[in-house]
Length: 313
Ligand SMILES: [Zn+2]
Image (cartoon, rainbow, N blue to C red; front, top):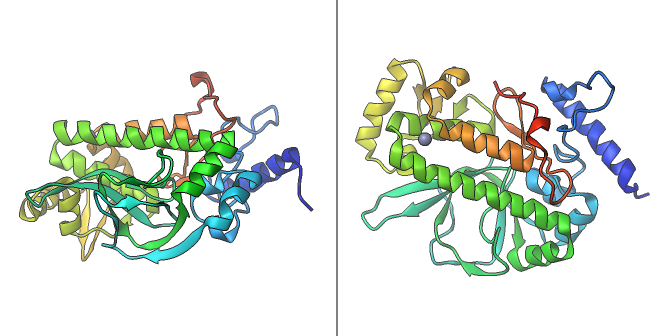
């Protein structure tokens, strides 16, 4: 039997409270009036998403009616580190939603062989045709950084769902705003901040999406992300390790102390994270991982006074 809207929202809230309680999140607590905090997500965190849409927070944040618009067209596949999902100039006919721990980076390759990261996208987002209606050529290149499952939906079908549902449209408009914020902040960061700070920003951004202190990052990959030579990056990483900010292993870099890494990073990581919290209602676990998005009522932003500054380690 299908639940009505009120029951569905209540069931979603209870499920999410249980999930947040499991990770010790402060928003799992009820307020003194017995009401759930208004920033408690009303959706997501594996809230009975059908298997086809499971693992991506944007798709899980949709209500059952909206999911039904997309589910029949969702295809799942596994991607591996280094896979290129699209290149600049390709006609992008499918929107790609990373799921679970899969992370993809949008980079801009330059003629001299260098490339620079513009946005890093995990299960909180999507790429390719997110904003546009239908098929348009890609501007950048999407490269898988951490392999895993992705969900792909035909861009024209997503466009139809946006036209049919105000809440689908609202969710993707908000996400497009957050993606633009990420890109804008990257522009500022690449132009103004030191390599050490930029490096920490990117490692923290990756940790937000996979949730473990150990990050599967090679020097080569990181040099590509930051647009510097590998030998130079190795020198920089050596200094950062001597300062205790990172620990370098074979094919991985560990952030032993996230608070120190945040303090050592530029303001860019925190600025983008705040924007995700304000616009998407993103909820972060104490280990930094994004665990839910909750956009609330379509078209309405929460007043700043309602924002609860918790969940930040
Ligand atoms: Zn920066």
